[in-house]
Image 1 (cartoon, rainbow, N blue to C red):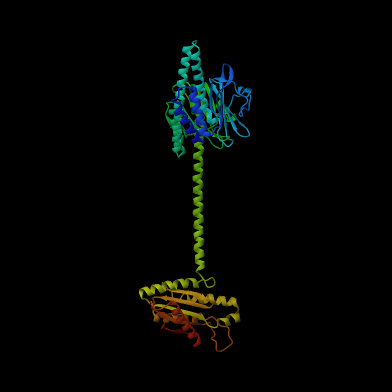
Image 2: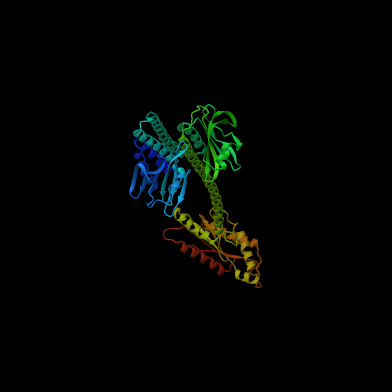
Length: 538
């Protein structure tokens, strides 16, 4: 909405600077209101010859300009209040009707109400009276100038004074249009600022220069209702950092007027002027309240300490609008800071959760590759590893040896001692045999049930035979008692081993190789157990 208001005033300022009559200006304003805010009805009522009359009306028939003004018609579809309603209105307001929102803006000149502007907009429109304060000042100046101009054409008496008033009004209009453009330029600079400190400096430094104010300072409130300095103006007119300043909100006239009565600006003539709470002179002083909806967030303080120049009537409306612009930028940057902090906190949480997730995944990956009972590599690891080593041996022409181990008579062991004892037996055997061959690349894994495998990449048949013998010796040294009453059975737990070695080629397959090792195992079983047998591939 702020950008829409700024564009509207920029367009009005540009077009009206070339207009030479009240009618032209009024019609230009109407067209821009239609284009910018979807206005579908408008009435401009002025006090003419001590009577309230209609100067301009926008309705379904178009724009009608009446001069001299006419009596307000009561038969139109838009008539909803009698004339006494307007006469008694001194402040801007909004009336909600079934189909429209009526925004009413009193037009003032030298504190006297000279007319009323009523605008009908759709119910969903966000247009507020505060958005039209500058427009009201412009129309007031133009109506006053226009009426004076018309009066000079009809009356020779007071012609010289009327011409002076007209010239003064034109000069004020020119100044107002210039200030409107300056307000737009400042707003653009503020939008480009992404750092609070930079934005506050620009608001003070450019605000003084472009709005022709001697001194300006911005104070912000904290949650404890203490005021803190940001940037301000010293007694020589220089923009300085006043971040050092902190104080309770003073019990002064401007505090009660802006904070208690929730007014946008407090203005006083011939009043003491202060710097760091010390009196330094006399002049006019203005405090523009900065608001976050109904919550005060600070002030813009202004005075004329240096030049003593008077404040123009339209400066009241300009400063109100300027306070609205600055407060919106403060809220914008505070929201941006909160968003940055929220994103940082969220990023930290994501990083922490990601780290935890990676750790959990690593643990899960590790668990998925470890046999839960024996705590050694499982068959999945063996299947992946043996294929990798098979391809490597095939590519480099290296030998690959494989041993398959099976615990002898393990069913009898389980039947006699129970499965808990069987599990304990498997754990002890795995822990012992996994230590027999520890060279890099070798893999000892549980293949399934009571079967284990030992993969020996790069090792020839003799090395495989040596390892088979070492495995048998390790089982003898472990000497786990075997529960059997048969004299044929050995008194300790033993294993049978099948052994084979191959150099993979294009004509061989891993499946056939594994069958050879398995066949060697069955030979060892058939020939008495507690032994190994070697079977070379065809």
